[in-house]
Image 1 (spheres, rainbow, N blue to C red):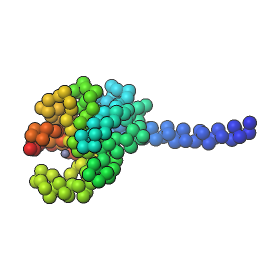
Image 2 (image 1 turned 120 degrees about the vertical axis):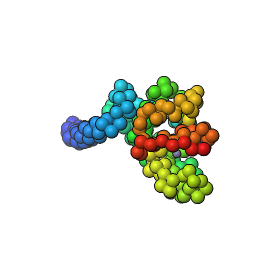
Image 3 (image 1 turned 90 degrees about the vertical axis):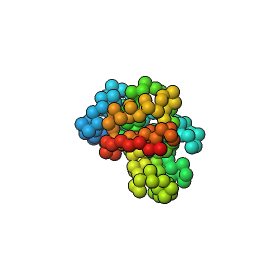
Length: 196
Ligand SMILES: [Zn+2]
């Protein structure tokens, strides 16, 4: 019986920490709402946010609820980070949660639950340097290196439609690559360009 009582205070402490952590999370979300009104509006309606990916290079799929009960789900973020890793050398980096919210808003606007086809997520410095040497279209320091960008297409939706939706959300940079059949979306400055 004594051990039962002794365990109680230990149980209470992490729960309080958790509550504190959640309130910080809500504050961060309020800041995001000011910066990205379109994203916040669509996110506010959903009690949970999920994302589905299909990585075209590795053939891996993932469908996961990455936000629930007012906070990001850390285990799901880890799974997403792994799926969006640099497929050339398996380097993993944390993907910025704003990018996940942007991707979620895009699928929400398109009204699709089909997996986002991923052409490129995180790019390690080595991979980015290699791609930059090969192509003028790759920046010296791409936002892919910060886990803030992805190159995507969505099955069943015309690339022009995806492009239009991405632009309308004003969540960051949008690059249109009709020949390569993908749209680049990032959570950097709001800007747009067309590539090959
Ligand atoms: Zn890109």
